[in-house]
Image (tube, each protein chain N blue to C red):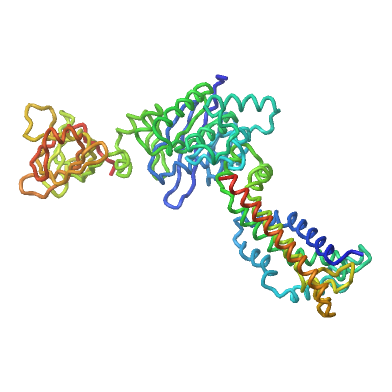
Length: 371
Length: 221
C-alpha cells in the first residue's frame, strides 16, 4: 500500500471579482498547507484543481495525467480526476445510510471487494457501529468522519481539504487529523489543506504556502513564511494586534538595528535592520503577547525598547487580560499599544486604570510589513 | 364501451405518465441551466395556467384538425383525425397540464443541495448516476407532487376536452363532460353520483401525497 504518490503541478490564472487569481506551485507526496485570509482565493484554487471550475488559462497535472491545459484544450471532468475533496460541510447523502454513503464511490466494483474496502475504512475511522444509521441521526463529528472515510475509500491520487475540521472540537480534530495523516503517509499522495488559522498551519505541516489576493506570496517551512515581511491583512490575521506606521530615523548597520519613529509622534523604537533608507516610511507589527509590563522602570535588562505609558483600559478576555496602554515621548501625542498578560500577572502587579507602567519590547519582536 | 369515469382515469394516467417522462428532462434543464433566456422558456411553459382552456382548446383544435400541420400528418399515418380522438385528448392534456408537472419537478430538483451533487461527482459518479441515485431520490416528494397534480388537473379538465374531443360517448366523453351533460338533461342523480366520485378520488389523491411526503420528511430528519 506504500506506493509513491504522483506529484501535483499547478499553474492557474482566473479573474475573480476582487483580483486576478494567479497561482503556481508543485506538491510531491506531502502535506501542504494553503494559508490565507478568507477571500484570498484558497478555495478557488481547490475548486480549479478538483474541476468544479475551469481556470481561464494554465496547466494542472497530477502524475503523468493532465487534468487541465488551456493550451491543449484539456479539461478532465470532475468524476474522472481521482481527486478527493472535502470541505467543512460533510455533504453526506441524507437518504442513504452511512454504509451506502461510504460505498457510493465504489459502486462499479464487485460486491465482495466493495464490502471488504468499506468494512476496513469504517473500522479505521471508528464509524463501523454507525453503518446502518442515516446521516441525520449521527453527530457533526461523526458525519465528518464518515465524509472523510467516503472520500478516502476511493483511493484518490490527491486530497483537497478545505478547512474540513473547522466545526469540530480540538480533541476530535486531533484524533481525525492523526488518522488522516497516517493514511496520507502510507500512500505518499499530495494533500492540500486549506486553513486560515496560523496555529493550525504550524501544527499540520512542514510546508506552508501563503496565499494573498490570489497569489502565492510565500512558500516554505512555517517559521520561515510566518517571519518574512508580510501584508497588513495577514498581520492582523496572524495575531499582530499592534500595527504602527513609522519613519526610519537612523540605521545602525554594524549593530543590525534601526531606530524608527512612530509617525506623528516623537516615540522612538529600535527594530531589526531592514532594507530601508533613513527617512523612508515603514510599517511595524508587534504582537500583544510579546510586550512585557513592569510597574517600575526596569534596569539591567537586554531589551532595547522601554516605553513609559499609562494604562487606559483593562479588559478581561477569555483566558487572558488585554491592556490598552498609551505611550508618549514628552508632551507629544499618545500612541496606544495593545498588551496581553495573564490574569495571574494582573493580580500580582495589582494593575489599575490610569496607573503608570513601563512596556518592554525586544528589538526582534518587531516585524516589518510590506508597504 | 368505456364509462366516462374510467375514460377520465385512463386519460389522467396516460397524461401524467407522459408528463413524467417529458417533464423530468425539461425540469432538469430548467433547474440547472445557466441559459440567460430561461425566464422566457418558463413563461411559455406556464402559459396554460393563465390561458382560458377554451382559448388553448381553440388553437389546438385548429392545429389538430385536418387543416393543421399536425392533424394532417397524423391523418396520413393513422388514417383518422387527431381531433375528436383519445390520442388528441392525450396530446391536448399533456400541453394543458404541462406546468402542473414541470413546475413542481423544477422546484424539487433545484432545491437539492448542490454540494451533494459536487460530492457525487468527486466520488466518480457520472451525471446519469448522480441524477438517479442522488437528485431523483432527494427530489422524489416534489416529483410525486408534480405527478399527482398533473393527474388531478387532467381528471378535472373540461374546456380543452370539450373543444378538442367533442363529446363522443365511449371515446372522448370524460367524467367532467358527462356531469355537464347530465345536468343539461336535468339528470341530477347521475350528475351527483359522478361528482361525488370525482371529489372522492381527488381528495384521496391529495391525502395520499401529503401523507407520503410527511412520512418521508420525517424519515430524513
